[in-house]
Image (cartoon, rainbow, N blue to C red; front, side, top):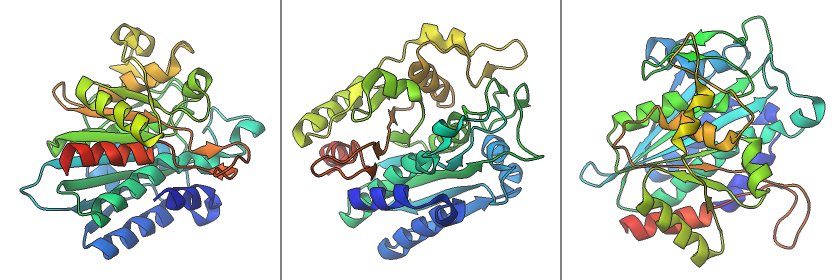
Length: 314
C-alpha cells in the first residue's frame, strides 16, 4: 500500500488526472469484488455536488466524484474520503512558480485513501466500506471559479470564495456530506490540505484532527506501536470566526492565523454533530533522500491508520 501511494503521487499529472484516479479505483474494485461509479462533469450538478464541480469546471479534464462500495450490509460502515486535486495551480489566486512546482502531489490524500481501501478489502476487514474520491484539476481558464463568488454545497450551506487556492476543502466538503448520509460508524478523510500544518509540524508528522477522543487516542496509540506517528491538533471552535462571511454562511478561507485548524473546522461544518470523524492533513512527500525514504511521494500515517482500523473492527 505504501508503494502504491508513492507511485501514484510520483506519476506526472498528465498521466494521473481525474480519469486515471478513477481507473485506479476500478482496478482495486475488480481485484476485490467491489462496485464503482463515477459522477462526472455536469452530472455533479444534477446529483447535487456543486462545490466539486465549481473547483474542477475550468479544466478540460472533467471533475468527478468516484464512489467505491464493498462489504456486507451487516458489518459496521466505514467511509474513507480523499482529496484528489490532480494538479493545483491555485486557480485565479495563482500560486507562485516555486509553490506550484510539486503540485502533482496534491492528490496525495486520494492516494492514501485508495491505498487504505485496498488494504481493507485485501485483508477482508469486516466493514461495509464506502470510498469517496473528489477528483479534479484546479485549473485557470474562462470558466474558473473566482474570488468573491458564492457557491452552493451539498449540505445546503453557501460558501463565499475568499481564495481559490483553498480549493481542497471545497472538493472535500461535498464528499464529507455524502459520506455522512450513509450513517457510517466512522469517517476518515485524508488531504494534502494546508501549508500551515507543515509549518506547525514539519513534513514528517501529519496533523490529526478528530471530534472523537476515542478515535484520536486509538490512532495516536497505533502511531506509537507502528512508529508511523500522527500529532493531534485542536478543533478550537472559537476560530470559526476566521471563516465568517457577510454574504454567505461561511467563507472558504480567511485569516492566516491557525490555518490548519480553520481548514479542519471548515470541514467539520459539513458533517452532522453526532458523526464520528477524523481528518488527516498530510504532506505525502519527501523533500530529500533518507534511508528507506526515497525523495518524492510518500505514505504517511498509512500503517498507523491500518493498525487503528484493525484494532477497532477486526
